Image 1: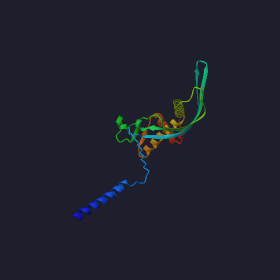
Image 2: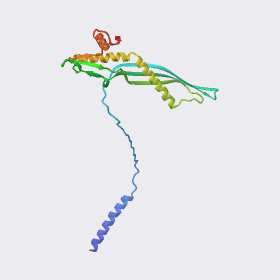
Image 3: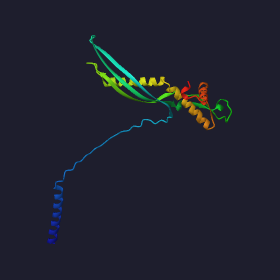
Image 4: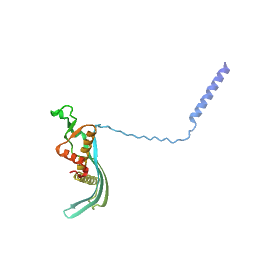
Length: 216
């Protein structure tokens, strides 16, 4: 019995010693890197849109900026810059603004395969991609360029591009293009498309072989 007790105590002692040695043994240093990235994406709204690009144009604009401040009614401190802007402009239509009706809705014959366009939206800029380059930036002694100044300059240059695009032939070409496309699509399905009188004459002119760019 004494022998068994002694053996048991020795066994427990050896096991405890091995465990303690393992715990106290120095471990090799290892690099631990904890990299965390957090991102939050918020979906604010989803809308079904049907917008069609019908014309694409490229524009360039040289925009001169100058601002002059007077200090103490005597000291003039100007700042100026020249910006060259180049833009790709896409002009098209929002089809949610188109209004159609069938002739029978206003007393026409049932089965008449004519689609009447009552209202068609004006062409609009669907996208504008602009690249800006600043040249000849001259700050004043006290009249410096700030981040707000640069933002204002870029906004003005972009607005100038939009104005130029809408004053160009892009809207007219886009308007003729979309109406002719609708006219051809309806015809391929056995339907007739009735546009407002002025637009109908344009479509007939296109059918006579005139180019879209030639129609006023």
